[in-house]
Length: 454
Image (cartoon, rainbow, N blue to C red):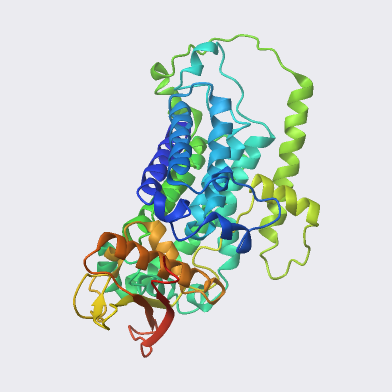
């Protein structure tokens, strides 16, 4: 799991690096001066906000890459894990509006890994271990609960008729052109199969946590949980554009594999698992277990807080701890309802002479028709998530920021065809039953000029 998580972190850095100027600098669409005004909670922190320059952001990305590489090879694993976790929190807090559930899972897995022995094999650190340590402590239970809670609470939140009535959840999910991939196009043409798969997904999400938390040493039980999890997320990732979400879910569950699985590769472990006595620091051991138990209880309360029947709220000091450690988590993927507000964006540019230009497609006329493959319009899932968030009524503040950034970027890239203003428009197409859609609504999200976009 350590190797897989490190590779995921490195992939995530590479993907984000392509848009470092847009998402993580003051010249982008989310400058540091605005960070504390929207979405920021007491206890949040980020050293990415100390300086908004491109050079500083690049430096932090380089350091993040370095510590991720140390984690990959298992050198000073405990320290490397701590540093990767810290850098990940800082990066996530720098721009909250391009995050998805997979980011929460990755961040929380890194937290629990601080207390797990994932540097004892297949690592450079493994050379110093002469014994195979026991792998169970309270942190192990916390890790198992984390993976199980993703499915426990998404099932508990799936209380709509789309899951329990007409089984239309997958139909509505695949009706979103901004998400649907080519294999999803094929599946979308088979309504009976989609209904069947909706029921299968629900049952699988019930079985996975049961098999994970079942107190048994039977290796086939654990293998079954990983197999079901693997099939579920390969299905999601091959039909819907969810970025690294499905890869993160698969990777962070690798530690559930029975120890016999790793023993097959012990020749790679750089360690001989001979019996030897190891010193035990009782005070540290019990202190760690006590702390892990408290965090585990806190994570349970955090998840329960999203249940409509649970009325308890955490006190401010406790919330401060949650926000500082970034234990925040919500596993409401495609629940309780599936999003039905689909659509596409239009970038109408105007020159100082009033000439109209389509800035997105770089055309001397406006292409307002629905794109044939909408999902191809997104450079990465981070842009897709931003586009999805801009549709939300509580995130309207993102629209003028994006509009100004896009206009400024266009003028810098096209000095001979500068635009004086940009009309940022969204065509909303809501999904309905039986492959129908509601009338398309043209919504003006923002109008900005070169004067407020400079």
